[in-house]
Length: 242
Ligand SMILES: NC(=O)c1ccc[n+]([C@@H]2O[C@H](COP(=O)([O-])OP(=O)(O)OC[C@H]3O[C@@H](n4cnc5c(N)ncnc54)[C@H](OP(=O)(O)O)[C@@H]3O)[C@@H](O)[C@H]2O)c1
Image (cartoon, rainbow, N blue to C red; front, top):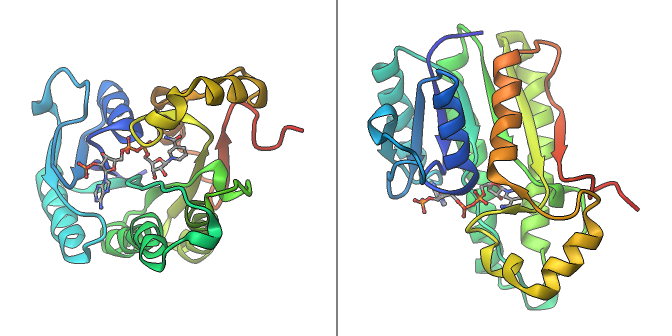
């Protein structure tokens, strides 16, 4: 495994913040990118993190940010393409602009992140985690844009795994189910939804950002060379339950 920083896009809140805090706790140098450049929400000491404003949909900002992190930390060992957006709409009412906005951050930004990290990984290898979703598999009504975008990440991850294994670059697609964050706070707060999810999710309800953080941290720490291209579900058993 190469040395250097772990870069996390969308590190200021939610899953990205929890992952930043978990990896810092485990001794990794964490570089948190977000549009605000804010420290991970809930962290005790912002000075422990390399922080930078970066819109993940902007390839120049990604390029500059990765170069800055590499210089600050002496290299990069891992990229977590985590920044993402969720919208709801009846499929027949979905506006083209709204569909494209979701694809821009959930898919295009991930492609750009992978492309721009390649020069940093080409010689010594590295690992990429793409933040997919169980909705990349499930056909969830009113989620056409989101489900389409997350399904795309499964394909993108498999291609990168196949193409870049010879550079010792691995790519994994993390597919969480319902996780309580700002992304879905309003939705999950409704009593009707709480009841529905307590019945649908075998473990009894949504997971926490810390659950996703622990999974990614464990996969990073264990460094399993044979594991690449996989989609890993973390969903309380919901996705494949009947
Ligand atoms: N929560 C869930 O149930 C769930 C389930 C499955 C998958 N996921 C996926 O997990 C990822 C994180 O979700 P979350 O629930 O943690 O969301 P969240 O709480 O809304 O946080 C999103 C993060 O992304 C950043 N961000 C948004 N647009 C950005 C951009 N263009 N460039 C850089 N950063 C940007 C935000 O920071 P700024 O506003 O400061 O930029 C924030 O830090 C997403 O890809 C989401 O699809 C979430």
